[in-house]
Length: 457
Ligand SMILES: Cc1cc2nc3c(=O)[nH]c(=O)nc-3n(C[C@H](O)[C@H](O)[C@H](O)COP(=O)(O)OP(=O)(O)OC[C@H]3O[C@@H](n4cnc5c(N)ncnc54)[C@H](O)[C@@H]3O)c2cc1C
Image (cartoon, rainbow, N blue to C red):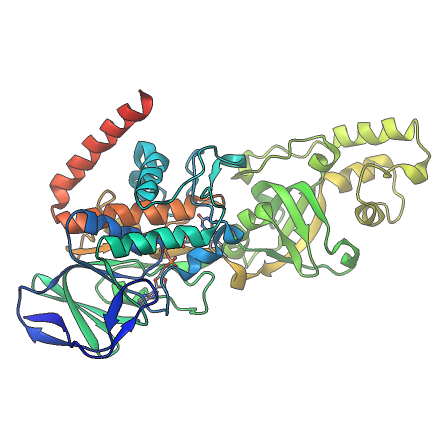
């Protein structure tokens, strides 16, 4: 049997506080095998490593970049929106995500991060978003890295894993010319969203018989035909956006919309992007309702299915315009109501109030695509149906686990994706270290119940 031994030569800093050897070789000896090998040092991989180490396992993380957690540093515009305490909002993979979150996911994640030394803000921001108290993504990564060092987790950087092979009761994991042997492997390689690598590392699991759900970019700006709308570039307004495919409403989201020379961005537009990308064969339009800008509808963010969306209330806007016309000259109708550039575009041919009200509640733009290079997550990935929803252990390949965005789980904007990455990593790490999937599932349920009682009391 193969095990990993350090050659003792060419020790170098990994940049994460640990030291690794530049060269390894495999020799026959069962005793020195790694307990748990984590592939990928992002949010899910580091959480998995830490929770496995907390169970007493010897853990090694293989990260292909020169530093772990690079994507974490970009999250939340550098603030890292860690989690969301609102109702869970997941799309693909929702049953598995809800199982991983359990009844008190945010509380468990808060406790885990606090245990790593991270101070998490006590009061959530708008829409239930929770950030580190420092407001710095870098402090999240530092807390995880230093906790790894404290728990003797070895993080080897510059190790791009190219193959995972099952051999008897262990796995051989190849990274370049090195081979690591471990009893349990956790794959946490993320998705191609927000990184240069367009392919991802899904082949590591499909080669072992796992199914792959095709990728669709999600949470990215919408590209629109902006001909004749150049004046709107730079406009930032609260609005309700409805995506239509062949004239039929698909999804609706409200929030701040940012207009640029290439289309519309901002949280609401990003929330529509995955549905827009998935309907590339249809005639896609974006209908903007500016009622929130005129204080005729709430400004809060929301996201829901288009089928349940109420039609825009053009009547309220018409009534407002009529009331203004009773006291203002026509030329001043929009002064003090709309940004000037928007008023100029809406009022170009000076239509009657009824037509103006329609334009202000259903301002239509043609969607030409989505800016996939700016996607924050990918819908699609490794099919969740082939994993135990509590332990994240592979059903066809026992001893193999998968966590984070590599799985076909995508959540809404607002911290849901990192929350799933961390919590799925924690669940996989603990299960892999304990290696008793069935009894662990039972313990998890009991533990969740106990935590629930603590939270309530
Ligand atoms: C710009 C941006 C902003 C975002 N902001 C937020 C936010 O505020 N809140 C939120 O909830 N979500 C946010 N997200 C989404 C969130 O970052 C991801 O969902 C989350 O990072 C997924 O964690 P992960 O560990 O599964 O994957 P990753 O963080 O992508 O980590 C995977 C790791 O595996 C490594 N790896 C890949 N292949 C291999 C291989 N073959 N061998 C070894 N290592 C490998 C990668 O280098 C990487 O370090 C944002 C995403 C982007 C791009």
